[in-house]
Image (cartoon, rainbow, N blue to C red; front, side, top):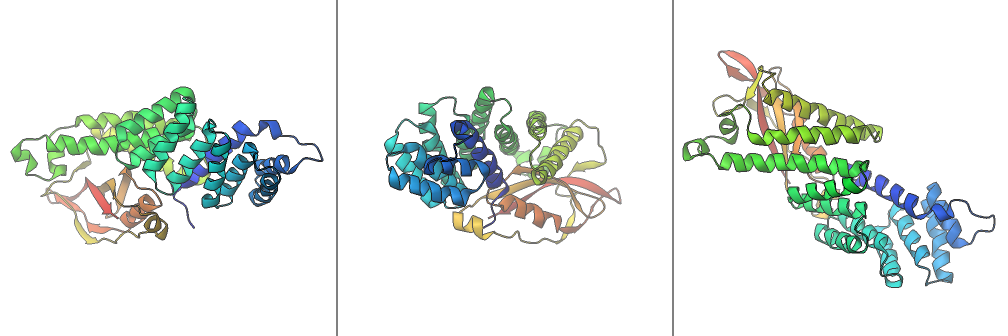
Amino acid sequence: MRRSRAATILLCWFFCLIVGLHSSAYAQQPPQANDKERGIELYGKGDFSAAVEALKEAVKKQGSDSDAWYYLGLSLVRAGKTGDARKAFEKTISLKPDFAPAFTAIAYIQLLGNDDKGAVKNAEKALALDPKNYESLYIAGVARLREDAAEEALARAEEALKIKPDYAMALLLKTEALMRMFAQERVKWVGSLNKRERNKSSSEAEGEVKRPPYYSLLKPASESLEAYLKLSPERSEQTYWNEQLETIRFYIRWAEGSDKSVVLMTRTLKPTILYRERARYPEEARAAGVQGTVVLKVVFDVDGTIKHILVVKGLSHGLTEEAIAATRKIRFTPAMGDGKPISVIGYLEFTF
């Protein structure tokens, strides 16, 4: 089953970090290593199926070994068996109630399963045991962002970065939280206009001032995203986020007035949509019950193509990617101003 971009990154970074933190004592094993030691060694080498078999043997022989149960859970997750993994982590907790990483691991599984409230609950339990557990801060932040609590998500990301300044996923969460706040503050700002202005479209109202105050959120968003990219994520992620970084920078320059060739869309200054495709709803997202709206800020360019696609509100399980793919297929006749085609900035929404 295809994972979403966020889930794939989280899987890689989270469990690579876990093995680094908890398996150093088993890095080099003697030739006659027992099942647990061999299983942990196999896990560290990335042979997750073999690790599962070895660790299952270990817990059969010694059912009270909390370390064996914990590593069995880690191996099961990497083998794609999250249901069995959760049972292994729950067994770990029953044997070792004060072991924060097991609560973190369950929170991670719940996050993948779109159980955001459960993820927050178990992340909080981990933090109560270990306040410096930055993985749990990150998981709680992602879950809260999904619930539109952007300010709280930002606070969790910044708290995690105080503990570990080079924590890539917290930098990414910070960027996404700031962009969500951008979207939320835009709605508040438009809603605060007087009755005459509120009768206009939101984009037309936005054009009443050169730079609405919420544009100030773009600079810190670009800074955190740039810091993330310096940590060299995998190539596919680097391409996507480099595009987003350049897009954020474009809108910063535009808001500062450096690009006068692009103007805001209004009710009388807008493109004529010729074709708009419905975004595909991936089975993965449908099965997880993911619902909501993806909001994109875009430029309807004079050449009849969509450019500068900025994700101001995304969704998990591949829905953001599907919205972007559908956006790229939109065909339109450019807006006309003073008798000539012009590029305009507008917003697109895809509701799932």
